[in-house]
Length: 184
Figure (spheres, rainbow, N blue to C red):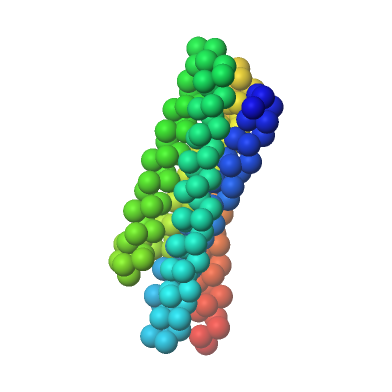
């Protein structure tokens, strides 16, 4: 298979991998928030979220992670010169972080499948932003390939992350205020 086809397949599976990671954490949030519902609602919702999570995790997310890596290794096998490039070495470090994130999500998935709820929905919202930071870092690195520009990109994403965290806190306050006003 030629380089461009391999690269296209790698990118397709990277995109579906990230889509799975973003959506699985949303399902975790919904699952945790169902804890606040009545017994009947909670049972119905959590049963559905478990099924949705299982399908997403094993039919989309894990296969996408494996296939993205498979095509990446194939590219590196055909063009090992990439391994000598500093930006590629840094990218592989971020991919390692992405796999650690993926494995941590797998642990949360397994806990929720067993009805073990250890995280609040707010913590999971913040957790969801970790994948965003990794995605931004990898994209800036691959596109810019220049250490100085890449550093500016990462500093920018850290700034954006701080804004996202503040937005999450603001959203939580507004949501709490609205729920309080609705109870009056």
